[in-house]
Image (cartoon, rainbow, N blue to C red; front, side, top):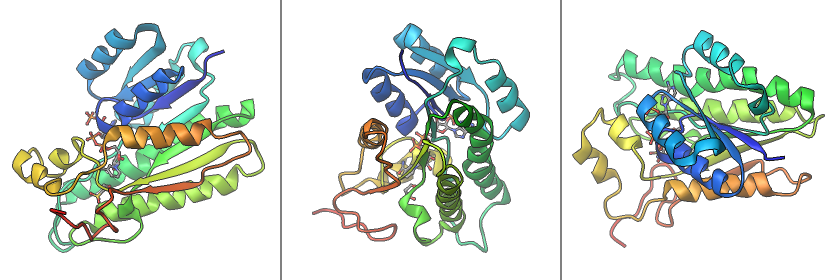
Length: 249
Ligand code: NDP
Ligand code: 8X3
């Protein structure tokens, strides 16, 4: 029987790459996101290998009713990838926007927690499953002007560690992936559509690609059942930590 992976934020970047990589490895994928057009494109491309679900992870009721609507033959989810997330703004903590902050907190922390709460009980019942949370180097230490985003990713680390403790008596595995700079739509979103500013983030360095992170996710999932890849920090070669990036080498 084919394995099923549910990926949040599958309409772009890392989430979309994980969908493609997992389908390439023989998975059936439940791709979720808010952008109906992009979900429809994935459905046209992958047909029966994909189920698409359109909802906002910040909306607890919509999340529950959408998950409840999953057809029976897609319900036995083997892998949950909590990827949906974003950074908004790059400003000192005493100047940032409340809207930006609360959107990050609602998406990156509360959205991840909502998905975990609704999907993991089925895994516990079936005595089988793997949860992959997308954290970040940003969760390891604050960097200038990024405190709230960094705090959300520090929370993702703590929630991942806590879940790993809470399922340690079961065969479930819990993995935290912590990428550094990955060139996706991330910076365009962070800078509210200022594409020139976004492009500058990746100037003078070869950043990671979304496919690099998808390969790491697949590695964790394909490890033997007794091997739990607890955490992976994945950086571009010229990035040393959240603050130190050596450009033009
Ligand atoms: P993208 O902007 O390319 O993708 C983000 C995805 O999250 C999109 O599919 C987006 O969908 C979805 N999303 C955002 N908000 C919501 C929401 N409220 N409900 C449902 N889906 C939502 O960025 P990345 O692929 O780079 O980001 C993916 C994850 O990786 C994030 O958690 C990010 O924090 C993390 N990360 C990124 C790094 C990077 O450098 N790029 C490095 C480390 C971690 P929509 O089109 O609807 O907005
Ligand atoms: C995204 C990586 O360093 O731009 O989480 O915050 S960084």
